Image (cartoon, rainbow, N blue to C red):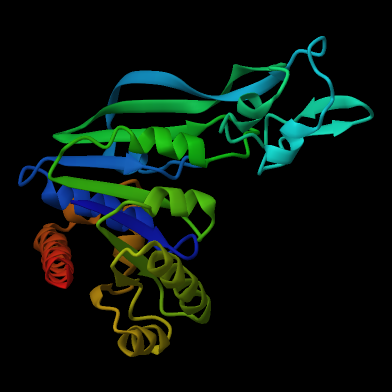
Length: 290
């Protein structure tokens, strides 16, 4: 089962949920943790994996042979990302915008475009206890996260529990991280900002057709509008974590709740069982519809 942990905004405790869920399942089922927040991965600070393999991730970008180019502008017409254009009678490329789709080379009538590798980051794999750990880390100045996230997700594996720590927000990197998951845990906080961004995140997962549930962090602060919204929308609130200064101190020191406070282990294990039951119910309902 592939479970993504996402949030409409940063700072809600998304990584806290993901790493504690992984640790609560450790030793019970095979676990693989994918840190898809490639712009600033931080799950390793808590799981403390030992990395044993690292490789460069690159994408193919266009390289124009001016001697063959007829400046027909076809490459610019087929590029959906404005990564190649004709200006002043010359073809200009923008590798930072290129998604590596290959359309420009495929449709160039004079075959004047060949592809070269353009490095975008590093993919590292290792072990954190019995948890298989995978993370991507973008190179400084690289604006394009989805290709690196896709490289991380190719290391999905066949473990019984796959936990995907997605970036914050609802933009392309988040969609790439969450897409294809069996379930999405949306972490929020009981504040107006938390509710606003939760609505965006719910819209995103519904557009992707992925079932979701909500976790309310710092639940004893703020108001009850988040829970009211979830009730009205039929979204289950699977877990509420109260605000506690001890938990904040635990996080700031790079520790995890389930290690410092063992009473949280069965709570997170039960969270996984709840998700598992909902995924199975959804699969049965889909089978009945067919």
